[in-house]
Image (cartoon, rainbow, N blue to C red; front, side):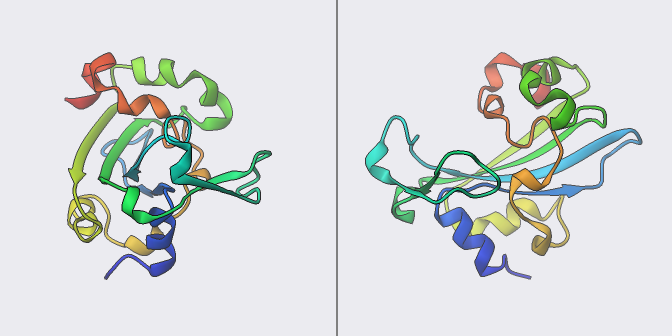
Length: 156
């Protein structure tokens, strides 16, 4: 089944998508996250527009001006101890990342049409993809996942 148009449009505007999936062991939680690879709103502000507040944010939401700014997509599978919720650990993502039991797998794809294939080993129903904010995980929204050199155990 293809990714729903509403979800593709979110990706095309620079937003990530996530879904919870079964973990490999009891007492753990696992997620897939799809992240569009696009310029930072701080480094290339001309690539972005700002909309009304969304997802309970107190600031305007940045929206990519055009999908042409997307250079590919990062598909992540994240698994961590179930205790690492955003409510309890959200600002301490570095501590969650430092936990030697936390694991991440990463697949980089060049085009939108390759996302489903990259998700297929982990996610059965692409309809379950939604905003990362819907998931109470300290890592689903973490900007630190983009630095594999800092936490090499994550990628084993």
